[in-house]
Length: 211
Image (cartoon, rainbow, N blue to C red; front, side, top):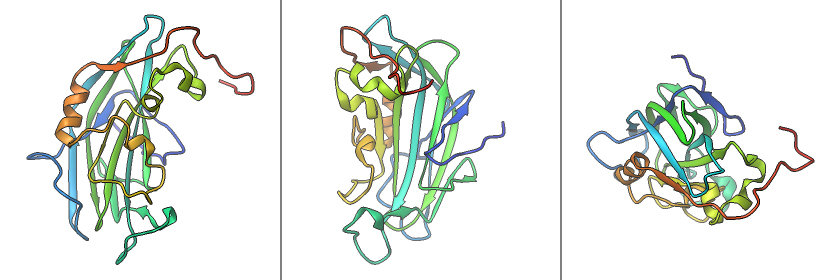
């Protein structure tokens, strides 16, 4: 299947999903300059379990990001971080420092995933992944009020190859429900993913937004 990977400002729509795992075990440490690290996740079907019967997950958004600090110094400002020296998914180089994939399933509350191979390099590089649910009954622009825990809206499961310094920009989604290792992340995805929602009326489409 031919795929195009887009910057995070866009959503890649895939009939089948994708993810990652490290051959031989969890990812060990930050890559050295010039050393290529590979992560491959097996194909599987993600299963979501909303706490309300009147809400269903129609899709999942998977954000994959790789950033590294400037050479020779720890950055003190967000703008110092940049795209990893190399960053590709299934052999295709990612143009920016992140890409957003939309995963869909044949049934409600599921998202089907193909195998995905991620390769990256660069001294001090950080590879991070965040998984977000998209609902059928609640617009994604306004779904924060549907969650019992606000942080779950940013990510129901996440992983980073190392600790994110405070100077890393837009790090919030990759800190929520974070797995301790890539093996733990794969295990979380293999089980039904709980989606804890508030009781009461559901948020609706804001009048100022178009579908």
